[in-house]
Length: 374
Image (cartoon, rainbow, N blue to C red; front, top):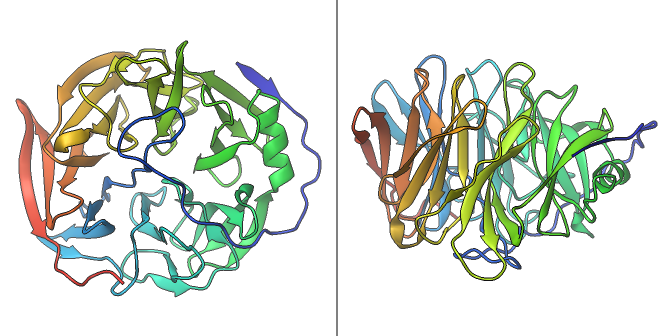
């Protein structure tokens, strides 16, 4: 359902630091959401690959350039919460922000293009969710931030520089709460942002676990989506902006309130409502990636299994297969095909898989050395 609001002038105050990362669990629950999933694969226009994957219970970043794999995780810094990895709109630069797991304002937070990450004592801290930092170019990004005193209970949308400083306030907490509440989304927690800095779209988890809101705070409009009857949203992917006028879409895991199998669906203003039953218990939130003609969702399952679901650009179900063992996240190659990054979160070996004519084909592998993280 769509709703709108005329938003007046925005306050110029900027919040301070964010509280710890949200609680997580390895199984779906209507009261305890799934762990955020940062794992992804990115391919630049020049063919360089970047990936985020969990190993040693920390988010690790790998780069594949000229056929050579190397570790890009900042040395001596805790990345237990994960690393928010994304490409600039021109597809040439990989940006990242390290998310600490317990105290976001104790460990340095690294931001900016990979290869020149800068440790910064930020006046604000990014929200502990995938998609909470979206680069605009090599020097600036849009970020969701929260306050030290209220955590995600007081969030703002800001523009940050690659050194971590806040350059501009885009939307205040009162504005974000007011726009979401018109769509029945009370006490919203904003998890992800997509689109341009001039007109971003935000995904908000609502106090009612059966509702989710996608809002445009600068337009004062949005849509809200409801989980299938008798179920609740327990995990979201990062929000992805579709090219043209197709809006923004995310993948969501929904869990029944009274027994039954968990399911996955797409949420957004321009997607059809098709729900796919999961082949096991989800171990983390879904990973989501889109090409010009297809949309893919990977769901990590308990026991090291994974499931990959393929949709058309309009949200119609096209396929549902078992993914690579220990599959964590996916991305899109320059040719428009899915790439999967796999690895045991408790182990050291990481593998890249590409889609072939008969399923996923194993690509390069890498072993994470011990002693990387602080």
